[in-house]
Each structure stands twice: as C-alpha cells, then as structure tokens.
Image (cartoon, rainbow, N blue to C red; front, side, top):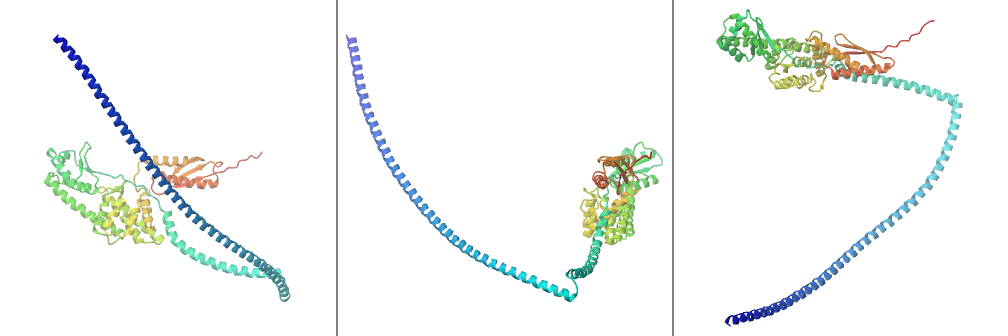
Length: 509
C-alpha cells in the first residue's frame, strides 16, 4: 500500500508539475508576444519618423536645386542679353563700314574716270611732243631709240668692265685665302697607324760556353741582370746568340750595351753586372739627350723643354715597320716646313709640330691610349702652344684638323711613311693588299678587267663601253676611290684610272 501511495503521489506530482510548467510557458509566451508587438510598434513609429524626415530633406534639396537653377538661368539670360547687345552693336558698325565702302567705291570710280581722261590727255601731249622733237632733231622715234640704246649699251659695258675688275680683285684675294686650305686638303692622305714594333734585340756571343757564364750558378747572374734592366734575357738553342726582349726600347738598349760590355770584359757576376748596367744607363741617357738636341737643331726648332728633348731622343731607339721614328719625325718636320712655305702659312709652327707629332710613341708602352693623344698631353704639360698641340692630336685623325698646319703635318706623316723603302712589308701582306685593291674595283657594275700597278699605287679599270658611258666613267672612278679610302689601309695615295674604249669596225668588200 505504501508503494501504491508513493506511485500515486509521484503521478500527482508529475501532473501538477506539468500543469504548472505549462502555465508558466503560456505566461512567458504572452509576455514575449506583447514585447514583440511593442518593438514592432516602436520600429514602425521610427520608420514613419525617418520617412517624414527624408521627405522633408528631399523637399529642401529640391527647393535649393530649384533656386540654383533659377539663379543660373538668370545669369545665362544676362549673358545672352549682353551678347545680343554686342552683336547688335557690331551689326551697326558693319553697316556703317559698308556705307563708307560704298562711298569710297563711288569716289574711286570718279577718280579712275579722271585718271583715264588725264592719261589720254598725256598721250596726246606726248604724241605732239614726239612729233615736234622729230621735226627739231631730224630723227624718227625708232632712230632716236636706237641711238639711246647704243649709248646705254656703251655705259653698261663700261660699268660691267669696272664691276668685273672689282669682282676679279675680290675673287683673287678670297681665292688666295681659300687656296691654302684647298691645296692642303688636296695633298692630304690619311696614313695607316702601324703598331707592330721590334721588341727584341739579338746579342752575339763568341761561343756557346758563354751562355753558361751568363746564366751563372743556379741562375744568379741572369736573375740579377733581369732584375736590374727590367727586360727578359732569352737563352735558347740559337747558336752564338742570346735574345733581349722588352717593349721598352730604351731599357732594351741599356741591356744590350751592358751585356755586350760584360761579354767583352769576361767577368760576369752580380756586382759586375750592376756596374756595367750603371755605365750603360749613363751612356744611353747621354745618347738620348744628344740625339734629342741634334734632332731639334737639324729641324731648326728652338726653345723646347728639356723633358721634350729627352723624350724626343728616346725615339732614336723606337722603330715602326723598320722605320726609325726619330728620323721619321725629322723627315715629317722638313716636309711640313717645305709645304708650309709653298702655301704661305706658318713654317715654324709646321716644323715644330712635325718634329713633335710622334712624341707619344716614346712612352706609349707606359701610358694607355693613342700615341697622338699621349704626345699632346705630354706637350701640354710642357707648355707647348695650343696650335702645336692641335697638330699633334690631329695627325692620325683622333681630332678633326682645324688648321692648315695640322693638315700639312698629317700629309707629311703619310708621305714619309708611304714613300718607297720607308717601311718593310712582307710579300704576303703586299700580295693581299694588291688582291684586295683589285677586288674592290672588280665589285662595281660594268667593270670588265682591272690591274693593280706601280706596287699598288695605281689601279687601272677597264669598263664595258656598252654599259658605262663617259659620264659614268667619271662617277665610277670617284666611287672606287671612295671605297678604297673606306675599306683599305695603305700609305700615300692610290691613283684610280678608268679606261673606256669604243671601237668601230667595218669591212671593205
């Protein structure tokens, strides 16, 4: 029974709990619904308020825009009114001008009528006067005209002769000035820049046993020699000869003299090598100074800086394709001086620049750059005149020549280097140069045959007469010459001769 009461109590408890819970849920739902309705009502009120505010703001904006549009329209109307006023004023002005032009046109018409009448009256008067003059002079109008023309012709001839004499005098004076440049340019030829030099000297020895003494114990003699002189001593299988190698010709000459003195003396050891080297250095320095002074004396160039004289003397030991550079400089100085005298320009300047033009070759193994620029820089440091510096810089085209003397130095350099026997040239390079010369001429249209003559200083070109006219021959010769200048390197100048032969053949029967 207790269990039954307990079960019934539990069921009653559950039922009461369920009823109480449902009652609470219903109360909460009703309150939530009321809250939701209040929120919706508030939102609707706010939305209505915002809508009204937006409508009011839109009306205000529309009102402002309307006012702005009305203001702008008023301004536009004012501008249009002003434009209309100006146009009306211009129309009035144009009307007034048109009336004035009409009046002037009427006036011009009346004036033209008066002018025509006066012209007729003048013609009548001229005819009367001409008739009267003919009666008085006893000449007709045609005869008087011819007489007047003859007199005018005589006057014109005299005036023309005076003008011609004046023009000839002026032309002769101008031609005398321009002829210097023209002749200088006419003899100018650009010489090829040869850079290959002799870099070795051969010293003969009495026997091959001397080679061991030169080398010394464990090579001490040869090491001491090379360290002192700064050159390479080459001892190989060449019989009775040793070779000195260096790019500095002065050092090579000092080494040669020292080695020959050692061989002649027979005592070869480091102390003796140093002694002979000092003597050779003193001797070569003295020879350099004497050679520079002698060259300046022979070229009649005075006032050279001592450093320039020493540098000039060093060219005694410099060669280019077998040509001694100091002798070449002297030759260029003489040639430039002779040509300057013929042209009537500064002879002293030409000779001075010609002597110093290759100055840079004495030190171009120590300083990088073209020898013309190096020489000009050295002369500039020694306060040589700007005209001399320009000639030095321009003699190989590193700078465009701007004076006649610069052109003369350039031409003299080419002449000295290009004369027969001045420089050695191998047979192979000589043949290649001739073949290339003929190939340049053969590459042109209408050329039949071509022959290089006089050791490559002349090219004769045979053309086809049916394809090349006489006028074309002149143009062809010029074209070939220009192509040779652009593509080939050569000393001196090359003569281009174009030959056109026409033959007429017939038979007598």
